Length: 268
Picture 1 (cartoon, rainbow, N blue to C red):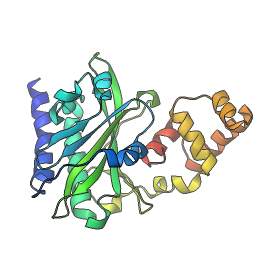
Picture 2 (tube, rainbow, N blue to C red):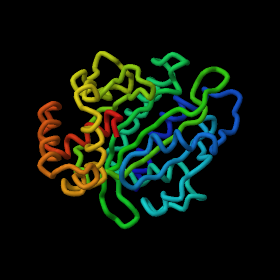
Picture 3 (cartoon, rainbow, N blue to C red):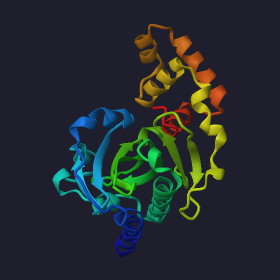
Picture 4 (cartoon, one colour):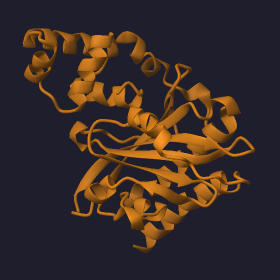
């Protein structure tokens, strides 16, 4: 337990150094006017989301679903409690990934782009039932301070255990308005370097048709070929043909890998 606390503090220090001193004039983020944007960022599967004030690292709003997913009462939630469910041995990696996310948003990106990107990575966690499961986190800036730094951020944690993902040491940075994506960037020393972008994965969005993207979205929700065929009023054979074509286009070995890559690319 002591080692776990130390690892949590390591992540906390990254946030303090990267975020805490950046905001000089805090203001409250108004949730109701941004519900559409929140919904647009959600991924398939069970999830919880929160808004964090980066000038004090306190949670301003937590969704009720956090209780069902990881057993934390929303009104009693804080960032250290969220970190406490992470598998201890990966906490140092999360600290480095978060450092790279901070570097990307507050240094690499020009101020005018900071509201239009999110970063994404996965991690294993243990829920309140003692089950080891897999989570994907998406982080996006909601507002900027008077100095142009991140003031409030949105965090979305989605359980993706059903996808059987293999966790790695990369982070993906996704544009929300059609600009350049930076896929599967190795976390390195916590400094973002665009030269390390996986350019092959960056082009997945260009390889798939709109119908194929729709089908991937349904696959991510756990629907089978027959259910998808019924939704689009096409044959099961046609659905399977779409799946084969998508695997060939993307180089993915199976549908699970395809769905995972599309999640990380922001297509779903």
